[in-house]
Length: 395
Image (tube, rainbow, N blue to C red; front, side, top):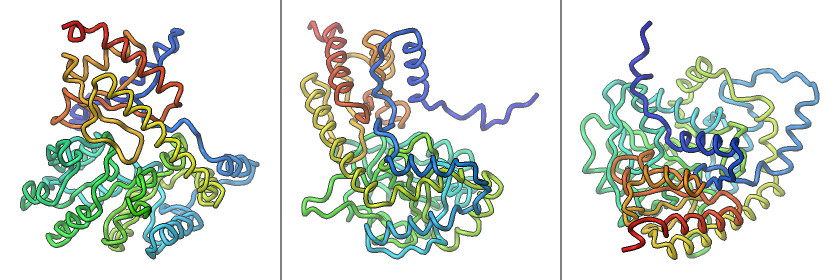
């Protein structure tokens, strides 16, 4: 029997491989400190949990429209109005089974065989895989700490060819937690718009960003580019990872195609999850999420100070999300070996750079500080003990 070529070609998501091994060690009775997965330890806000319990009272839970519950789409539109002062027609919003499904739908609607999609290296690995699933080519542009591992207008222009149809930007980024300066984001979008290309902007971690120096809250690309495609999620800021609920804001011309694709791919996102998610936008839930953002910022300081003490530099400190991307080349180990040995010998799970692209595949490691302060402190202590045992530490 024939196996599809795309199934043979697709690369693993190494963070999940690390997590699987960590779970095996934990099942064997070992105490593993998990700093590899981007999963906040807070859980959903209490009002969201209460709303889910209420939704499961035995009432019928039929399919919603393929684009999602109109009530929830109106709540999302109101969120953009209140946070960013932009008017988004709820008809332009599609609710999806997690942000991954939003990316899948958007790339299915915008990418043909041979199309090129420009993105940063390092970046979220599934973006590359999804582009290639639809016959496109992911053009990964090597970035560095000098640009905070983000694209800029000049890098995008240099990577541009006659086959470029989209630019993908994540701000803040996974794996680095760094944000693109808003003026640079505007410049990249203007370049792509002038050349007739889609702008796909991942704002999944936007609301976990630090305010600007003047205290202004993080800005959405929709403030300067109303026709950009925006991807977002209930997973990170709202702590609802396992609920598998996300959304996309679409330009009008994409709504019909994406709706038809959603009908055929998924029918709709989970009905009870959509009902419960409306409680995420209550004042009480949003205030709680802001408290949690500040807690993550405090955890960041613990991690950055700890990594500096250990001689593991974070050349581009994060200003959002909950990741620190640090250089392990001074250890004498490549990043995969480093993560493998740290897990087996120190029982700390981290994510190797090979997940995120070629440029930093062997030199960098991602640490998620979405775990508790206690776990972070213990994990850093174990990491220090591991480094002390390396030959490089005895030179």
